[in-house]
Image 1 (tube, rainbow, N blue to C red):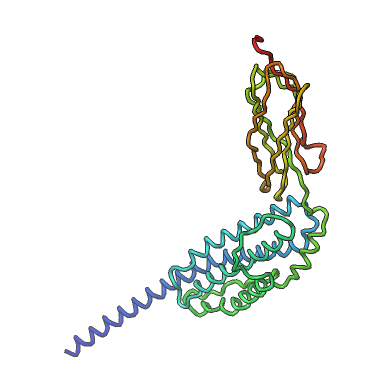
Image 2: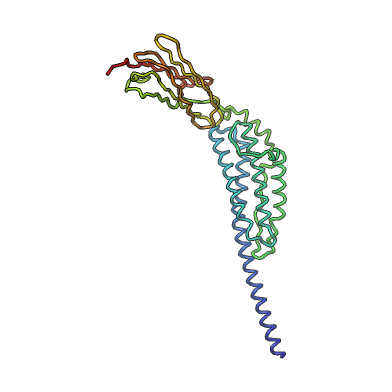
Length: 315
């Protein structure tokens, strides 16, 4: 009986040891995998912090286009962090440092969104979408400092666990900046000031004119002429534009139509087609003008066409 008991104790002890070893190996693998993933993300977050701080303090020397591109790149990085944070929750480590890091990352994404939105609004740029519950700029910066400080203590929690890893610290350059002052400097830079630029992109006439010299419309005998105008916004800002079309016959009363639209940054828009009344044999001019936009030599803001409607029975 004593031999049997001894044998069972030895077997149980071996199984417990094997189980403990397997658990140790599993935990070590999980901890090391998390360390690899989190190190990549922490490096990205610290690089983002450096880029944002540099853009705010040195961005006044950039062109508006370059500054806009850098802002867009930073916004895209934040979207990527949201996706990456979803992979941190499983499996839950012991201690659950991965859940802490995922929560801190999402908090910092929201904080950085607030900072970027503040900059975008001040410079009349397109920035991250923020909700009505978004923090103020000051609260967002305090939150960035708080998460960096708390993570500084928590990042050591796996140092005595299987794998013995100590994770990177978070930098906090953006949280300590005087953002309102830096943004005021950016807003005063002439090269970052928004400028307007809208151009006539295309004009379509129905019925389709015959081949003719430039700015000449030769039409079949018809009683109507339909004109549609497309315009393009060449800047990274919202731009209102007013379109005027005037058909002036050689004799008779001019026909005039106006329309307006606000164009989103770097987009095009086609105004609704307008139908003018004409008659066979009529001659006149059609003037298409964009109103309220600055006069730039390189951009087309007005076109005047010579209009000639063939008389009835002409071949």
